[in-house]
Image 1 (tube, rainbow, N blue to C red):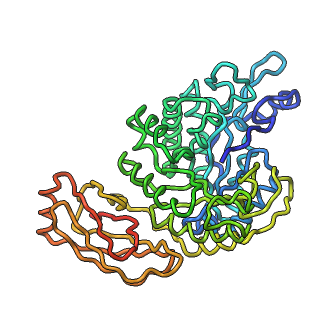
Image 2 (cartoon, one colour):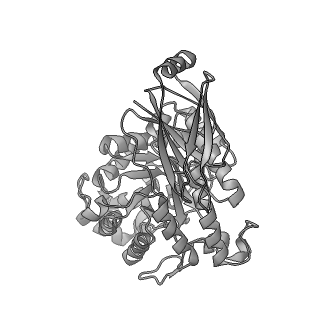
Image 3 (cartoon, rainbow, N blue to C red):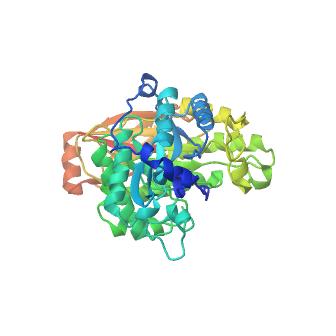
Length: 474
């Protein structure tokens, strides 16, 4: 989804009032000033987030309402917009240049995260004009779309953000939809440089910090991502979270997710796959899935209820559902909340039928705990090559149907042609099951000989259940 084309005056151009006030607002280098509250430390660990479209100039009361609604929906995450140009500004005061940092607006996210116990995915965007590398004709007011000219200064800025919020905000998505030219005025190579600098700044400033690839919008092609990864061979090791944006029919959702999960695996990017934007309109005029059309809000709710478990079964680890209405056309009714746009102070919002669907999904789609050091997690949607690290396989199955999945038989076949028969019990709709398969010593030796550095496996599924992932345990 497009983010709005305007930013607040504070984020773009210094007015005379701001310039005059700047010396009094000047701050020194940032430091970690927040610690996680008990509520945040106990935050739920499910596979549902909300895409909120909160901006640096959104009134605090409106921000708080979106956090409150996210908590009520049971979401574990809320996705917000963190503007560098709202924090880092430069100007001139009575002939004297100055530089200042102002954390007032972005500190609100950390405050609300602690208050409501909802984790934040912060989109790092909005290049400050004085470090921007803009194409000819781009005005200073529009420079926030531009790539970065001073990568060292950019890395320092992002590092300051990561340091200040360490422990409260740990997950950062680097730009939004950089593959769309009207939102990022640069090449894939320039995005690769920006992404690498941001990752270095975040990882150095916060050991818990995780870097997410900017949400990829054009999921029908990998051309942009191919070019980004080709520009810097070190990027796969620096990207902790892979992302796409998904708006598709229910019948193609699983295939799209599985294809991108396989793509990232093939490039050595074995972190989780997050859908940082996912939604479906409530306005029947814009409902594009023939199975879910004509009943307005009820069709929206039915689409989400049917599709979210399928996405999880296909390899999606986190789904950020559009929280509120935004913009025009199909975006104008995509929220699970009907709300005015832009959000005013103390907005009046109405929960659509889809809100209850998200609540149920948050209760049933529970994320697995992070893999411990030394454990490799791989997708099993197609043959994959991995390092054999021990004598056990942990298989995680997901029931991606709206009804319970019956017991099913499987055959796990390795490149050595040795196979293992498996059987799963009945799995509740939307739930997962993990089972461990011990390998005999002769099997391990055979696999090592045949696989060299690893093994190849395939899964023959006779029952329609989806294998979510396989973990090799030391």
